[in-house]
Length: 82
Image (cartoon, rainbow, N blue to C red; front, side, top):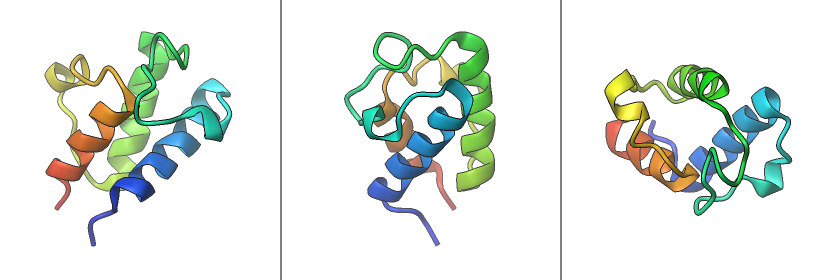
């Protein structure tokens, strides 16, 4: 069963919290991973791997560079879920 956008945001918030120590409530769709949430490229790889496992999607490296904001990631996951 596909996750809702709200569930994906909540899941990404938990992942970013675990990897980067960012408070869950700070992870919002309009936030930039690098500028607002201070997620560096190494941490972003960890976020992507965790998101792939959690939501059952594959995010190719070429697509990761297009995921600038939490909302970008939510939209990507929403459209690529089984």
